[in-house]
Image 1 (cartoon, rainbow, N blue to C red):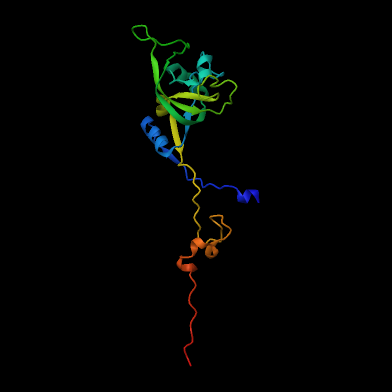
Image 2 (tube, rainbow, N blue to C red):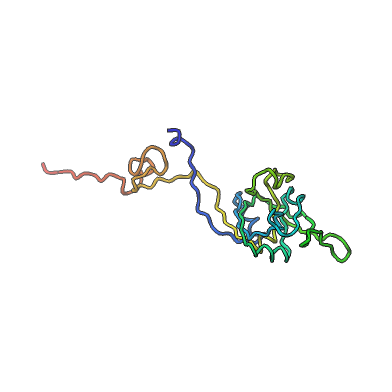
Length: 205
């Protein structure tokens, strides 16, 4: 009985979303919901232990995922993999120094670090023991390059679930979970098929 009395939600159908940065931000803002993103996986970018290129443990602790360099793309495609995460927000101003295939900072002509700017905040599925332990939103969260999503991602989401259950008056089910179904449900009182037909009256005297 506890299950039958529990609060019920209707899950709306999911749909693919244009993965452009502006579109993803607009969707999350307008619908107040997160977005699932599937990605090609680049081992050095994710500072993964199976990377053949040097990784950055400080970036891993902060959850920084940069746009992959050419060598990372080349090596990662030799053992191609994918990964899915949940995007929950963004920071247009966050900048992180870019790194090359040796794990060293990339410098511009004036000797200043080249910066990756613009990241989505995401919730990862790798636990909280090592990934994102220094992320200000909590262990397990990370920052994913917006360029990475636009180039190598695909996005899907749905509008938030609702409690609006409508009784269907001819399917034999209690669709709105109020204990009555079909024509016995008050929600069907005005449906033509549920209005009793007046009985014929014999007017012969």
